[in-house]
Every structure is written in structure tokens, then in C-alpha cells.
Length: 118
Image 1 (cartoon, one colour):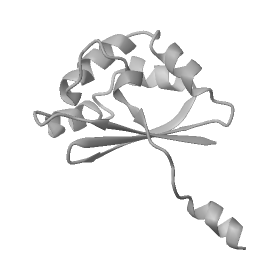
Image 2 (image 1 turned 120 degrees about the vertical axis):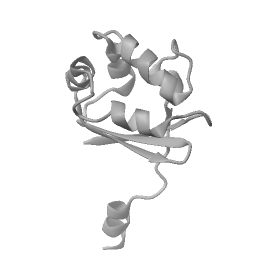
Image 3 (image 1 turned 180 degrees about the vertical axis):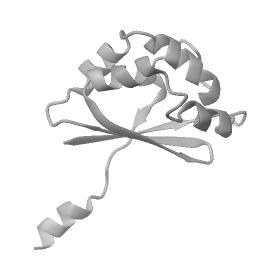
């Protein structure tokens, strides 16, 4: 299993309640959920803190991030979804997910420390 963590800074005009509502199961676009499953995302979570959204994406060990994200961009309604959420994110509607979401580097892992110390 691989875990990718990314961050997105939003502008001051961000409407958190609308963004949260857009990501509720009853409001998610079926094509977007299907597209993530098609590129083999096993799980994904979004967290909100002030002007920052943090995403965790769990995939299989053989997941190739760059190839998968390139494929995701071509799947049905994905460009439309990116344009739709861009208004909440304070991003340009033509900006790709790759341009908006910045990867975070993991600096601590509890289990690795446990294994090292045992």
C-alpha cells in the first residue's frame, strides 16, 4: 500500500461549507468516484484546516502516481469536475489537479520508529 498526502492552499474567499457539501456522498459526481476507482485509488480523504485542504490517497504498492494522474485527467467529466471545484479552491478553472495539489513529504512514521527500536 502507498499513501500520498497532498496540500492545497485556498484563498480568503473560500466557502468551506459549499466545498464540504460538494464532497458529501449524495453530492459527489458518480463519474468522479468511478474515475478514482478506475485509476486504482483504494481510499481518499480530505481534511480542512483554515485555508488549507489536506488530501490522503491510498493506493496499491504498484500504483504509478504520474501515469494514474495523467489517465485521470482524460476520464469522463474529470475536467468538468476540476473546473467545478476550482471555484471553491480559489484556483483557475483550467488548472489541473497536478498544478493545484502539492505533495507533502513524510518526515515521521510511527511504525518505522517502532520497528527500528525493537
